[in-house]
Image (cartoon, rainbow, N blue to C red; front, side):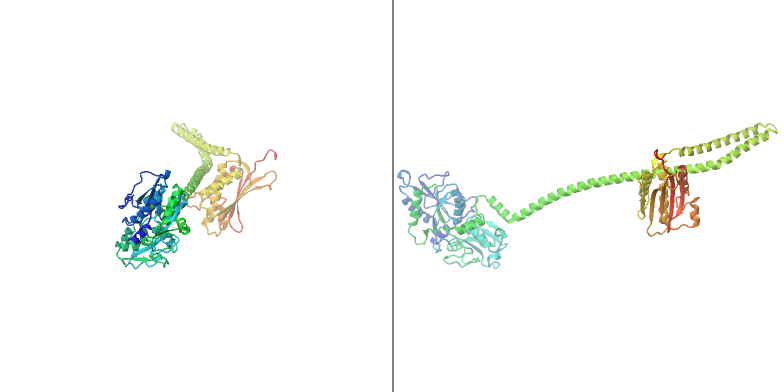
Length: 622
């Protein structure tokens, strides 16, 4: 029984079930504090824990209470006796009672005492309990890893990685924290070492049963708890096997971890100094029972503080907080990484959205500009096509009017002569009317011819001062937008400005037609490096008659003499859709602008089309 008492006194932990609370001992009056006490009122409340709830520790605590009650006679106010009462708690409720000052004197683990001391809870150490199994009171607490005896998977601590583990509670110093300290020797992240951890409460019996019933692979018990459960008949001898057993000198129980000081007896600092002194004197003067338990002065807690600080040991009464702490500790790096990835994704999404919006805006602008250019090119093509058709009609009209003028004049003369001839041979009304009608219709035809000729003369008068260089540039732009000339290199050598008098539309039509003819000449033959050269320069060779010379040169195949001669009098077209009037229209346009249209062979091959136009003479030159 004394061995069981020692194990019970060494078994204070945090993780109580929600139903666990203050319980009454059968052999001594147990009071449940009704309010929080923050000063000494002449009564001494002693708190302790009995995790297995077997009542075996009560006799030891009763003897302590009796010893203190005898020692504290007359220590109260006005020489009154100090009443001593015992309060048994579930392990975690004891921790809560200490913090809330519901107890004045308490027996807790060395880890929880260091936690209270370091957090400034106002507690003072009085003594350390040395169990009979330990020869050194500073090496009396620790953890044991147990598995089923027939489970051969686990032989050392490193084998426990990813195992399902059952333990008393997260706040149990010698039932969890000391086990993590041992795992830290084989893993950089001891809290994430196990596959799954289940906290069953303060009782080591529930942990042992979880392993035996295969609800867990590994159980974590306190030092000497396995021996206590076996001695009490609660665990069958040999059913559990220790993993990672360490050779510990001075301890009669098996251990898998480093050893730490046992239970600490401490008092609240609001307990008067005289009362605390009497408590210490009574404790140290207690006779050693047959069980071998005794109070000692061992108070070297440096190793305990190291472990507590290493694992941020801070008991909490909220299971949800404990679960969150486990999740936070296990997945903190993954959570941080996930947050960073999420933040980076959001930043990337915003950045991409801005880039897409900016580039979409630029693309829309380019498309709008392209549409505008295409629309402008289409209008230019339509305008030049209409002008070309009008030029063809004008040329045909002039040719027809010119050719019809003489036959019509002859017809009128013959009608007049016939009328005179018949008039001398007698009067015939029918013949007279016929000859007069012939004359009238011939005059009508003549007036139509004159009207066509006057239209052509009016076109010659629609001229104004323009920049021939700007006209050439506009024609070049129209040509590039409407002709399939991507494979032909076109170069231009133009003056800055070339003022002349003329019709810009007709001159633009001339330049476009000339460029089209050059392109056709290059595409109709196999030319290795097809090229069109466009030049506009001043010609000052004739005094008082300065002129602008436009030259369109291609490097097409050489022309024979017959084709070269036909350039001056074109009557047919080599183009499938041509009428043979392109050069005729160009010649008419040149004549209307008092220009000269000439052709010459280029060296070593090709053709040069040249248009010479008079310059506009400025006032200073005049």
